[in-house]
Amino acid sequence: MIHLGQTRSAMPGNHALLTPDTFVRAPLPGMQRATAIVHAAPAMGAAFTQYTAEFEAGGSLGPTAAQRFLFVLEGELTVTAGRKRHALQPGGYAYLPDDSYTVSAVSASRAAVIEKAYLPLKGVRRPKLLIGTEAGAPAAPLMGPQGSDDWLTVHKLLPEEPAFDFAVNTMTYLPGATLPMVEIHVMEHGLLMLEGGGIYRLDDCWYPVTAGDFIWMGPYCPQWFGALGKTPAKYLIYKDWNRHPLEAA
Ligand code: UGY
Ligand code: MN
Image 1 (spheres, helix red, strand yellow):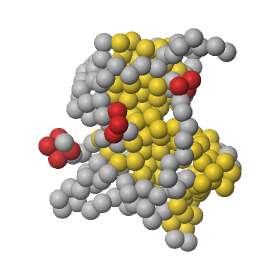
Image 2: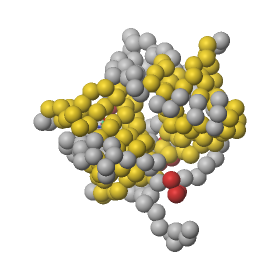
Image 3: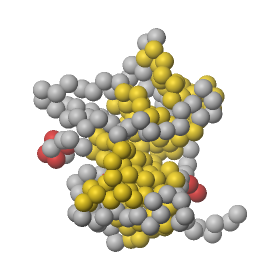
Image 4: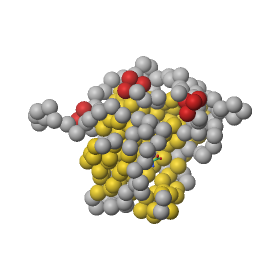
């Protein structure tokens, strides 16, 4: 197919929409039989890195100096810590506080990976290894200015403890559900569309979005979403969290 230079991808400054037709794969240092599509990185102004890791059977991630969050999209991964092994299937996730863990693929797999330098908080201990599943994570309707909205469910994948300096949630919208307000906030977001689609407002642009798309929202980027179609729309969303803006700057 000839694209004639057309794409839905856009990078106007304080946000980015990156669609699969523009993804470029390149291994990160230390990856074995695996490659990465780097969606968000300091080069674009983000204070974190997010990529999709694609593994062959037996493939593995390289080391990182940062804390790491993994969410399995397809296949099966093993997180090894000393003699302990944790199997992660689709919807399974892991928070790895440091580099003492290896991540390898049992079969051909894909995972969303988020990496961020840890911001310590005085008097608070760093978080430990955490393994979970989306289905087992606490779920609640989103609270908006008019109260809660049962059409929009949030699964909080990380505990709401000050030790964590970021949050990762899934948000599931029934068809027709919307964010209850245009949000403008200091936190940035990395967002991977997992299912369905709709319209995302980012700053003063309205974009059609669908499963597989990635969105980065910089601090204070106006944002709103409405789900379209006959099936729910779901996304995985990262935000920096629990830290004073003066510390994070
Ligand atoms: O957590 C959030 O800020 C979330 N409600 N933002 C979003 O979905 N764009
Ligand atoms: Mn938001």
